[in-house]
Image 1 (cartoon, one colour):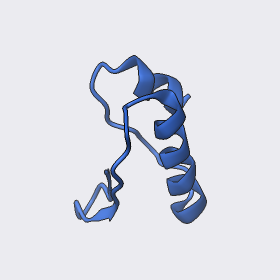
Image 2: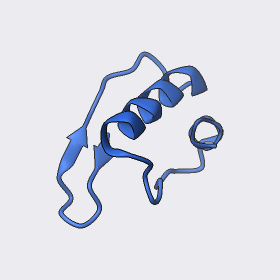
Image 3: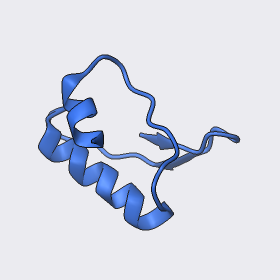
Length: 54
């Protein structure tokens, strides 16, 4: 899920089969192409999210 930081409005949400780098990277790339590069990504300690974001 991607939320706008100031308002908390959900700008995109998708169901993905797994939390693997492959699916997370595709989601983040879609967000980037629609809204531009995010200023920050809030995540848990997931290595896959970290790798997809970098």
